[in-house]
Image (cartoon, rainbow over all chains, first blue to last red; front, side, top):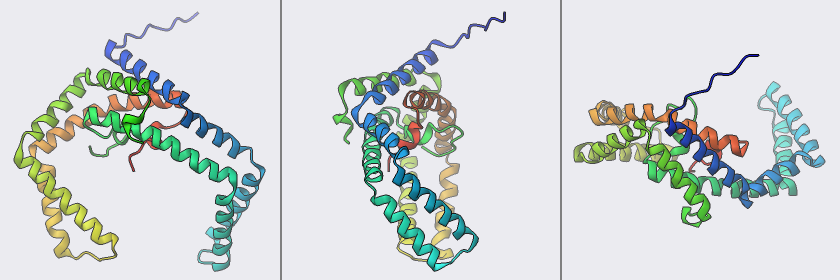
Length: 130
Length: 124
C-alpha cells in the first residue's frame, strides 16, 4: 500500500487556508447567499426558462450563420425580453444582486486592509495591476 | 452593502484572514513597497497625473470623441514615465510576488462557496 507523504506546509499557509475556508463557510451560510443558491436551482428546473433558453440558443446559432438578418435579430431580442421577464429569471437576477452586494462588501473589507483590490488580484494567472 | 453592515462574525473572519495574509513575507514586502511609494510625493503626484489623464481620455472617448494623435501622445509619454518610475516598478514587482498568496486565499473561499468568489465579488 502506498502511503502519501505528509506535506510540510508552512504554518502561515495552513493558517491562511483555514481562515479563508472559515470565511467561505460563513458566507455560504448567509441568507443572501442561500437565496442565490436557491434561485439558481429554481432557474435550472423551470420548464419555461428551459424552453425559452433553447429557442434563444437556436435563434442565436441561426443568426451567427446569417449576420445582419433584421428579422432574426428582432426575434432574438423578443425572446431575450421574454426570458428576462419570467419570474424565475427576475428572482434569479435579484438574488444574484444580493449575493454580489454581500461578496463585494467582503471584498472591500479585505481590500482596505491589504491595500490592494483583493478580488481583482486573486485571480489565477491574473496580470492586472493594483 | 456597506462593509460595516456585514454580520460581526463575517467581519471578524475577514479581519482574521487579512491578519493571516499580512503575516506572509511577500505580503509584508508589498505593504512596505506601498508605504515607500506613498511616502514619495513625486511618485504620488506622477501617479495622480497619469490616472487623471487616463480618466479624462476615457471619458472623452466614451462620449464619442475620436482622440487625435495630439491627444494621445502626452498620454503615451506619461505612461512610459509612470511605468519606468523605480517606485512603481518596485511596487508592481512586490504585487506580482504577493498575488499567489491572494490567489490561494481566494481559491479557498471559492471552494467553500462552490463558485468563483473573485468573479462575484468584483467591485463594479
